[in-house]
Image (cartoon, rainbow, N blue to C red):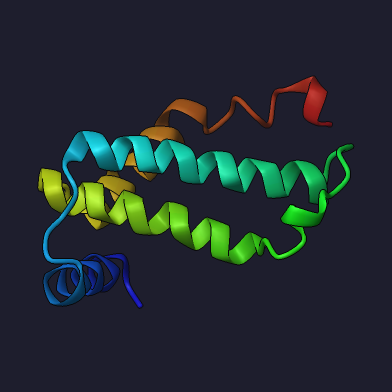
Length: 108
């Protein structure tokens, strides 16, 4: 699935099952919440915290998909073509950082 196809799939799902998009501000708050849930799983899986019993049913891939879902909603709502935005972002990073990381002694 391409990014554009994902944006279209989310839009169609919202129109079919979701009645309408939540407001942009609500979705921004939901995105923050979802990133927090992802961070919780990451901290317990790869960090020093132990899992609580209520954390055991959490799934890393599902939490990442939740973040992506809300990001796709926000892109649709604000008219952002994420494919183009991502391509532009890669170009920006390439121009800005093409030598930066190679010359970083901390990464060697």
